[in-house]
Image (cartoon, rainbow, N blue to C red; front, top):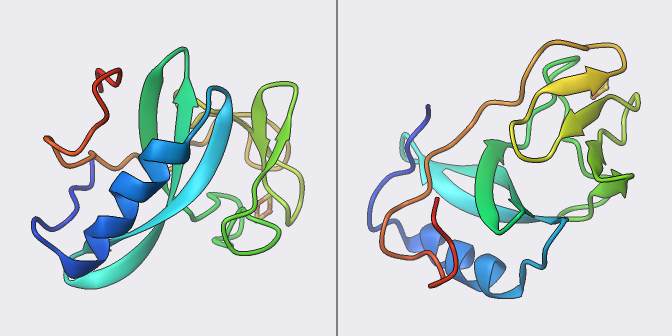
Length: 119
Ligand code: FES
């Protein structure tokens, strides 16, 4: 699992995203990974927060239809490019051109989760 850089100037965006992330939704956070800004998809499902690189395993494109705007259909995250559907908790592609592949998970930095977040 990828790990964001600690104490990065861009990691501040994660706490703001988590504060407004409602159940069953997805939002974007930008964290530094390997010294470079990286777009992440942050989801909250059943109270659990997960983060994945915003890179579709099908064709390597971003999943959002506009920066930070994600399609969610029947509880699944849908890639705006070719319509692959992903389980929002695991990142597994459950339908579409990359079925069986997964988004790349990213470990969230400990200590900046909201109190109700156990991940
Ligand atoms: S790039 Fe996401 S489904 Fe093709």
